[in-house]
Image 1 (cartoon, rainbow, N blue to C red):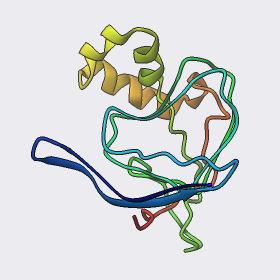
Image 2: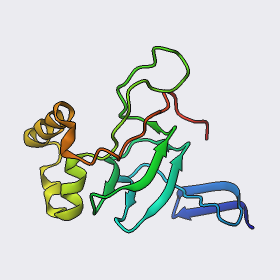
Image 3: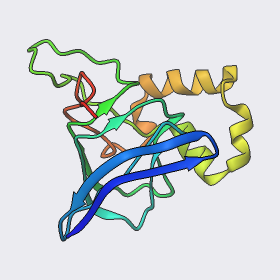
Image 4: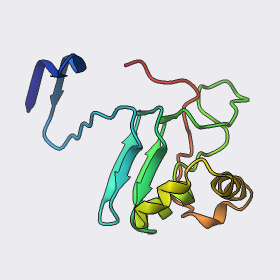
Length: 152
């Protein structure tokens, strides 16, 4: 087991970590993810990972990948971009969420495409993706996204 107690990190006056305590048992994986461009980048060679009970907040792209085959599962994560609904009031969305956007894939393969971010063409691409979801891999999906963020 690995244990961290009261970890702190500053860059000048900017405090990025404050009193972080965590423990990691053998076989367990823990990641610290904050608001940035990508919530998570998953390489095509990554497989059998379970991404469960995470908050994906304030990211330009929730998920990005360099491949089309997905051998990972997403369940019960909170996505701030999720626009679904919860009719049965169980705290989980009734409509699956697809966190991988086509523009994230394009940017992963061609980083200079980021110059087009927030342009009319990318807005059009995002809207067409909602109408034709077959453009991105079907199995990049959180079938039961959370409606409220998890307490930190």
